[in-house]
Image: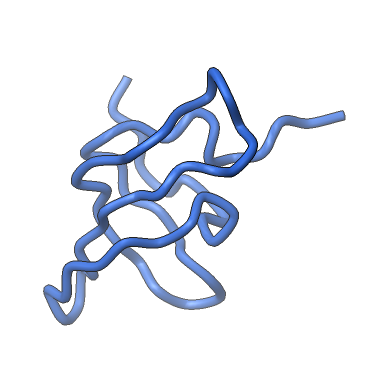
Length: 67
């Protein structure tokens, strides 16, 4: 069974949120130690610059990962 994608997200990663929003991860609250409930990520939308919090399960894919 694959782990959810949000468990390996780090600040400065570029991620796909929902179906069509690309965002840069700024910070997060929570973490992989206790994945219930999923962490909250503070993200900045790449197109609009809007900054907001999203739930971990909304992160569908990591598009750019800074190792």
